[in-house]
Structure formats: C-alpha cells, structure tokens
Amino acid sequence: MGGQPEGEPLRCLVTGATGYLGGRLVPELLAAGHRVRCLARTPRKLRDHPWAGDVEVVRGDVTDEESLREAMRDVDVAYYLVHSMGGADDFERTDRLAARMFGRSARACGVGRIVYLGGLVSSRVPEEQLSPHLRSRAEVGRLLLESGVPTTVLRAAVVLGSGSASFEILRYLTERLPVMVTPGWVRTRLQPIAVRDVLRYLVGSARMPREVNRAFDIGGPDVVTYREMMRRYAAVAGLPRRLVVQLPLLTPKLSSLWIGLVTPVPGSIARPLAESLRCEVVCEEQDILRYVPDPPGGRIGLDEALALALRRVRDADVATRWSSASVPGAPSDPLPTDPEWAGGSLYTDERELVVAASPEALWQVIEGVGGENGWYSLPLAWAVRGWLDRLVGGVGLRRGRRDAQRLRVGDSLDFWRVEEIEPGRLLRLRAEMRLPGLAWLEMYCERDERGRTRYRQRALFHPHGLAGQAYWWGVSPFHAVVFGGMARNIAGAAAARTSAAPVH
Image 1 (cartoon, helix red, strand yellow):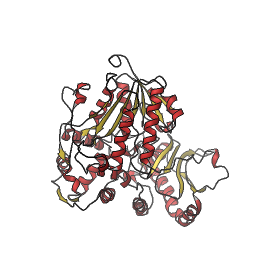
Image 2: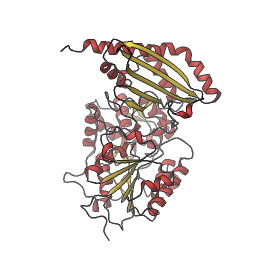
Image 3: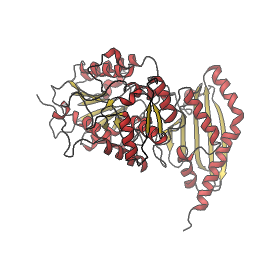
Image 4: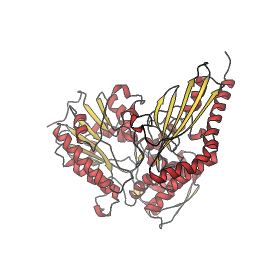
C-alpha cells in the first residue's frame, strides 16, 4: 500500500515554525508544492517571515489538545519539531505529555503521517545511561511510533548550518581559542549532517509509503571526532591550526559552563548538546536512502557544510538561528499595552527628544540597535549586566542579531526579543535576561505637532513580589545615566547620519 500520489500537493502542519529548523522547513515545503499550516503559541512571531503570506497560521500549543485537533483538521502530514532544550526540571514529563497528545490528536483527525526529528543514539548504549535530554528525545520518538499513525522518526547527531547551536558553538570555540583545554568528549566519534540534508529528509519523509512506521538514522558522509571537526573548521575559515588539550575531568555540567563562557549559547542549551557527545553518535544504518535517495551530487560533506554556513554568516544571510526559539523560562505574559495591566504595578522610565534628523535616519538607528552596534550608552555597564545574567543562567548579551540592519518579530536581540515592530514607527523589545519581573524597552520614531522628528523611549518594568520592587528601586538611580544617555546618543547618531547623507 503506497503513500500519497507523487504529484499531489500535501497539506502539512508544522509545529515549531518559530524555531531554527521549523522556520527553514516551511519554505522548503512550499517550494515542493505543498500547502502549509503553522501552529504557533504566538502567531505574530511568524508575521515578518518572507513566507508568512503563503501559509496559514493558527494559534495553539502542543500541550493543548483542543487547539491541536483544530490545527490538524484536513492535514496529511504533521511535523513535530518541538523540543525542551533546557528550563524546568520536569521537561521529560512535559515532553511525554505533549507527544502523547500529539499522537492521539493526529489519530483522531485522520492525519496520514507524523514526521519527527530526534537525536541520534547508539543501540549499544542502555537507555538508562543516556542523558536526560537524549532519553526524552528517544521516548518522544517511541510514543509517536506507538500512536497508531504512520510515523517517521529521523535521528540526527550534530546539525551544521548557519545559525544552528551546534555550528555556533563550533565556530566560537575554534575562532576565539587558538589553544583549547577541552573535555574528553572531543575524542567522541560523530557523524555531522548539513542542515540542507536534514531539510531534504524532512520534506522527502512526507511521501513515505503508509506501511512505513519506524526510525531512521541520518548523517552526512563524514565520520569524525569533535577535535577533528574543530581543526577542519579552522582550515575552512582560514585560521591557523588549533592546539587542543584534553582535560577529562570536565563533566557535562562544567563543559556547558565552559561553552557558555566562550560562546553566545547559554548553558541551558549547551548542556544537552555536550551531554549528547558523551557516547559515540554514528549512523548504524542508512535505510532512509530507500525512500529519500541521495541527490546526484551526494550528501553534503563536512567541509562543504562548514563553508556554506560560514558564507551565510559572513554575508549576513542567516534565515533562522538557534535563538529563534523561545528561551526556556522567558516571560510570555501580556504586553504592557494590554488591558490586563490596568491597575497593576508597572514602573516606567520615559525619555523624549526632538531630533535634528529625518525620520528615516532615526528609524535606521533604532532598527540597528544591539549586536555590533551596541546600545548607545555605557558599553561597560551593558557588558557587566550581560555577564551577570550569564552567571545566573541567563542568555547574556552575546546572542547578537540575526541580521545587521533588519529586525522582525520574534528575532532575538542580545538579551531582548523583538515583541513588536511597526516599520518607521515602533520597536518594542521584551527582556529575556533573568529578572524578578517582566521588562520591556520601547523606541518610537514620531513627528511632533510642528512636524519635527521626535524620538520617544520608554522602559517598563512589572515587578514580581518584594524582590521585584527592590530591584527597580535599586537600579532606578542609574536610569538617568543609562537610559538618558541612550536617548541622547541615539538622537545624535540619527543627526550625524542625516548630515552625512548626500544632498541631491
């Protein structure tokens, strides 16, 4: 019994479309001629993607069965690309609940196939020896296979692509440390795979015959150690040969702290990746090729995958990043403009300046904040705040930007996330640093009643308990310097941009 006819478009549901792989899978499915529906807790995060107008977006969550069943209506293939990379101690229970609910809903709605991307594990390693995150990935795959819906489970080790967490860790470790003291897992053999090949397998899995219900190992053509991968990255990037010294005493927890110190990837995400490398992660079969054969040129090799990812980074052409997904524990409460806030404690710091600049120049400065451009006041103070955040397990200030000039809703921006953007008028950022409350920063580009360009800036803080109150009053004496200086310097940068513009 076969699957869907080859030429007939499929109706695909993509969960995790705001994340790294989901955000790249959607355009690939569209290019293959399929119709796509995206399930998102916050639909507006998908609003500014280039493909947003070509898909249907529905609000919902994989732990909300009612929204799942509504999203799965008339769906042929459902992609499950949701993972708990860090955060709460009960993530295994949450993943288990979500997988069961997803499978149950798919069966009730008559979905033809589930496709899931999990982690590659060796059959020789007992499940009790796996890290909690790998064990949870394996359990999710098993629950989906037992759901009664034909399921494809793809199991990958290290995914290499511009913006992937694995690539960012590799890039920063190799570029920043000519001499590296590393954990013992740098000797582990692994089989990395280019993100393009992962996407090709995900798209191709949609048309598997109905009788196929199993897991497949997927990987690229190269089997290397992590140390060899660092050396090959250095060669591709044109860097001098790196000296790697192993220190076996570095546990996965210490490794994640070490990664968090050197790279922008926080420990909560680095730890599952480090733990997954304790055991060999090499494909034990290549049965996927029976259903999704290699392209004429074969799978992408390690050096080519690294070169492609580097080119994307250097050309500032990164479609999605590891930070595209929500940070575990980050606030998801209402916006400060929502009516629920009426009567609540909401502290504000407001600044307003008339700017000797065109609105276009002011907006260019506003949209360009953060990353390499900084925050226009006391760089050392911002850097210290970032370090303090990382010390308590936060994301810190080094996530940077996906694009040097343009922002879209859902983008991470250092330790903020773009909550709303109205081009030419408003940029609203929600804080994702560790705080005893919720915080936003709003920047407006306006014209006043006399037609002059006006910059308006508003910092907002909703405290949680006594700690939140103490935090606000503890930092408020510094607001005049930090936020006042920021407003003045943004206005000055816009004025300088206007005066430097050629006169036509």
